[in-house]
Length: 168
Ligand SMILES: Cc1cc2nc3c(=O)[nH]c(=O)nc-3n(C[C@H](O)[C@H](O)[C@H](O)COP(=O)(O)O)c2cc1C
Image 1 (cartoon, protein in one colour):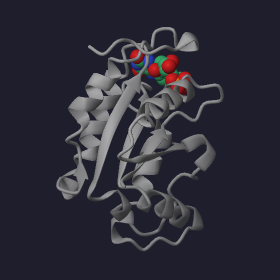
Image 2 (tube, rainbow, N blue to C red):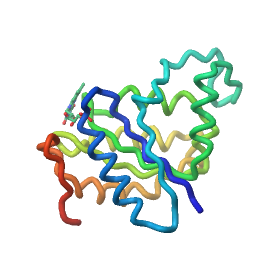
Image 3 (cartoon, rainbow, N blue to C red):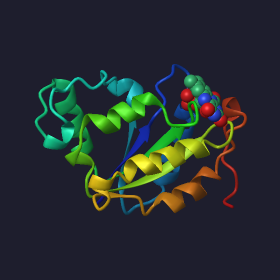
Image 4 (spheres, protein in one colour):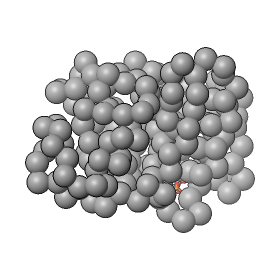
């Protein structure tokens, strides 16, 4: 059975993303054809990338990198739950994406965004990153349109009173 990680990309204390990610997990767990786990990047607490060799070479030396690689390798796909920071996605997510390479390959990814404008520019930026030329056939982005529909399911404007909207 496919094992899917729901990755919370905000690491701020008290972030709105925690409620969104838990809601996504609750919705996902209604399915019986996959298993789901929540990965909170604040808990993972990865240091900034400090590997001497590019991760694409697969020669990880830092224990943090190997631990993160083992976590990511365990999953068949990912749903990234991201806010928009300065017209993009948070740096903590970029670091998590940059830190390992092969473990992301041949996996499907969906995106759920939220924020003042629904986090649409975070999704735009992520689509570029996830479609990097060297991995075009490796990191699936076929679920992105579905992710856009999911984005409309949430009302981000009052994140302290987060609630899902009806399906558009
Ligand atoms: C550092 C930072 C930068 C932000 N930049 C933007 C932005 O460029 N555009 C936008 O619509 N919202 C922006 N916001 C608002 C966030 O998207 C919104 O507050 C979101 O709910 C934050 O999610 P979080 O609480 O899970 O971190 C920014 C918030 C932060 C903390």
